[in-house]
Image (tube, rainbow over all chains, first blue to last red; front, side):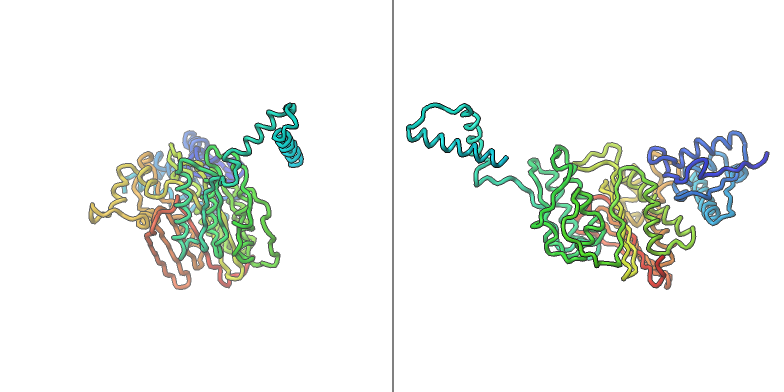
Length: 112
Length: 384
């Protein structure tokens, strides 16, 4: 299946929020439940382009959205499905931070 | 209105004089109205010796979170005493002694004074306060007056332009006080715009990312941890936080301050971590020694918090680390101060020497909530 292109700023928001829905709009929790889960359920490989965002995908957002879904489906499956477009500076930094949060979440879930 | 009262008063005096002289015996048509008014004037409230109950809150001469931090604690105590008193009259905040103040001190004052303004039942003063020049910035110099005005201290309480502002005070730029009780991500963009307009510290996206992350974590911390589900304290609004900033183009220093008047770090840990909190509130070497608040901030800053009782499966408790990450990522000399309860934690990063220093201090009393301050020395880096 062809890797789908997902434009974060246009399809979700330019201003991603905090960790939980109760704390802010466009939260990490919302992104995981409304967007990422669908990719995993459909087994749809995706490349997320984060260019065009005004404020960054903060660590809590990344941890809640990407970290938790990586714990749920396993890191191999996660890496197979999710990619962040690293062709820009924003994409590169976001990808680096996302991978750190994913590793931290997996470590924590494994009790380390 | 005064003219009407004067005429009424004159008619009453004329009537009583004529009555005493035995000239008239008939009461005027509005006799009872006049009598009611005169009796009211004689009542205690209107007597010359009656003094309205006014609580004076005297602000100290120096207000900052550095050497004069104890002064701040005195203010908190006065306000807390007032809030806890059973009979609350009006209040007067005496600024006349102030000769020196930092933006952190002012932000803290705003948070505390806002408690007085929003106290339940005080509907009359909830709208706005008035500036009285006798209790205003009498002894402050033009620069301090400018600072109070530009940071939005007066405006926050609905006071327009309380005094003449010297226009020749340049090279100081202020991000005026902003406040909310919800998340405000768009405000973050405003703050970045302010910084980008003054200095070029975001020369790579990773620096901007770390900045975004630190401010978002401060917001998230205030909304999620600083206030419990059933938070109810006089004059306080659940979730409330404030932020402001200052760039001094002469000293080439950028300061950003974030404040909430929530439960503070100790209660927050107990609330979030439940039984796990015991490990962190006690020194690991001895069960008898309870960690002080500065130590607790240190534990949070190192990201060594245990699992949260409500989210055991999640990777949490790293927010404070992001404050430090931003300080470190700026590639400039930077100071990060976190004050909560009776603890002051200061992290100093000297970029050129690559030296990190941590200072901890136990204060003589507790501050209300938590204050986070970043101070970045821009140095010779050109302004934008």
